[in-house]
Length: 115
Image 1: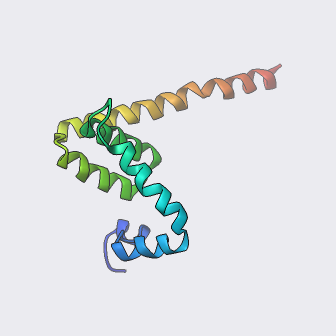
Image 2 (image 1 turned 120 degrees about the vertical axis):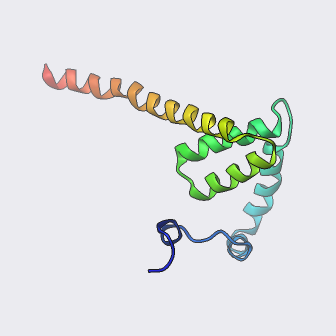
Image 3 (image 1 turned 180 degrees about the vertical axis):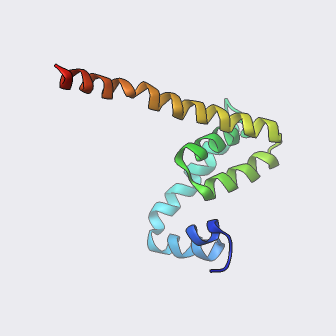
């Protein structure tokens, strides 16, 4: 097989692919684009901060295309490599913390089963 593992696992995001997806659900795409633009526009949070948040979340949701896109956009909005890596670590900690916190559910079931 040609290409690296990522290319084999994830199709390349191209304008043609985006158009084909939009053609299958045009109303949803028409609603999505202005929503996305509004979400990432400066407001109480600046655009760089929003991109750093999105970059961290992209790692938790494990969206390869999102990781690529938000890394590029965060950099364009002025984020440093250090800021991006810290955002990724914050997201990682939150995901690990959530897994550990949910261990209480398993613990409660273990205690019930041990009775």
